[in-house]
Length: 170
Image (cartoon, rainbow, N blue to C red; front, side):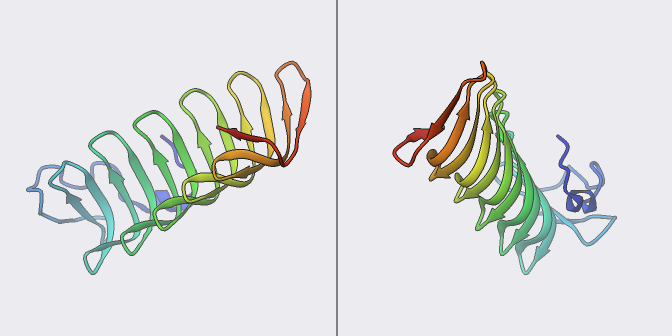
């Protein structure tokens, strides 16, 4: 997966750290002061550590296939990052307190694409949701649902204006 924000390229190149080490061993990266840590459950982290916490930039790989590459603060995803999920979804954008927040883009495995505002891991604020089947919704989202003012354009060109009474989960 190709993350487009500049901070990802500041991480160590793949393969620059030793993959064979005991679970509790931290290894210094030869290209900077980055560390690698393998957790007892098989997950791994390589990146900046400050006082025993993830701080700065790093990559977290889950044994189930999820990968986060981006900024950390106080051991949580914070700032800009990219996340690839085991189900095939991909997200690039802001994180706050470990959750998707601010502006971001989600590419869903089924082909749908959402570009817009997030809060606490949910679509919230203004955004555009393009459906793989051809429809597009542009407007307000609240707590993960299309809610408020917006316009839905169907694949055949028909348009439907949504009002505050609509509440459609996506």
